Amino acid sequence: MKSLVPEAFYWARSDRHTDGKTTIVQVSSVFGEDPDYWTIAILGSDQHCMISDFEIIALVEPLDGYPLQHAAE
Image (tube, rainbow, N blue to C red; front, side, top):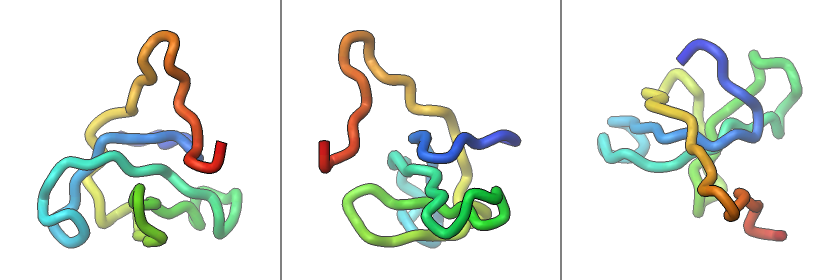
C-alpha cells in the first residue's frame, strides 16, 4: 500500500504489536499533518506505532448505510 489516507481505517497486522493477528488500525496525524509524522493508532488503546511496523492489507470499506464514526460521536 503506497498511499495511505490520514484518519482512514485499514486492515493490518504486525508481528511486533498484534502477534501477527489481523486487526483494524487507523492512520493518525495527531503528531503532524506531514506524512513523515503519521503513525498507526491501534483501536481500543492509546498506542501509536510506526507505520513501518505494520503490514497494511486493505482499506476498511464502510457498510452501506453504516458510516464509520469515532467512538466519541
